[in-house]
Length: 131
Image 1 (spheres, rainbow, N blue to C red):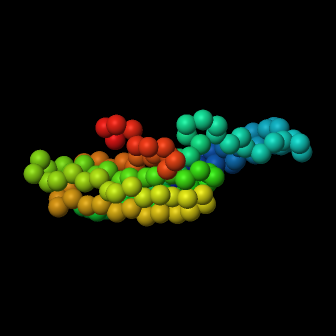
Image 2 (cartoon, helix red, strand yellow):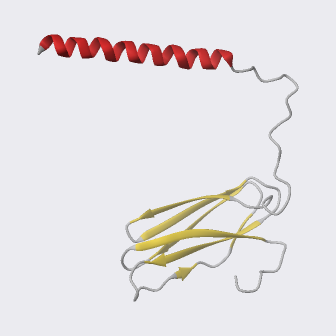
C-alpha cells in the first residue's frame, strides 16, 4: 500500500511539473506589449455613462456598491424581487453617481430574495417611460 502512495505522489509531482513547464512556455511565447500601445479604449455610445455595480445578497438583505469611472453622471436604482408572493418587491430611489464617485444602495425582503439588479439612467436625460 505504501508503494502505491509513493507512486501516486511521484505521478502527481510529475504532472504538476509538466503543467508548470507548459504554462511557462505559453507565457514566454506570448508577444510582449508594444511600447506605443494606446491605452484601453473608452466605450463610446450609450454605455459610456454606466457605473460598475456589484450586488451582494446576504439572507434577506441586498447591497449594491457602484463606482462610476466615466465623466458623465449616472443615476442608479436598486431593484429587489422577493421570493414569497406576499413579500413586497422594492425599487430604490434614484441615486446620482458622479464622475469618479461611489454609492452604496441597500434593499431587503422579509424572507428570501429571488433576484436583485441595478438599472442605469444618464442623469442628463429624462427618464424613459415605464422605467
